[in-house]
Image (cartoon, rainbow, N blue to C red; front, side, top):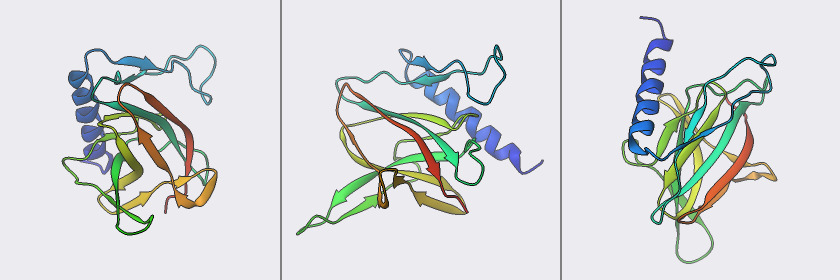
Length: 160
């Protein structure tokens, strides 16, 4: 078994789980900037926001060569305020926190209950809280509201 097999199995399982979890999901994107015209690419299913959940979507590209972060796990880490002050801690639980594997184009879509989250890219060997593109010295803060979709756009990831 080569090194990519477990990641491909995990990606397949995540995609099947996402499809089964939300039968009202819609497709995102039918073309990619790096594919020849007319070349079909797989579509990603985007969960439909509900009265109990919001959705965050985006795309992850490597800073080195703008390659997509294909198959990397994206988590929503809960931002929990520390009292007193404006500091917070980002928490996530590997099995319980909202997460999904990015598709072949680095795209992801996650549904979660309302709250303030940070996006975290995770592998068994390394994790990284994603920076805010407008201020790389701060974490990207995503505020989800029930019934709404937040598009974070293309995020360039400085991955080791």
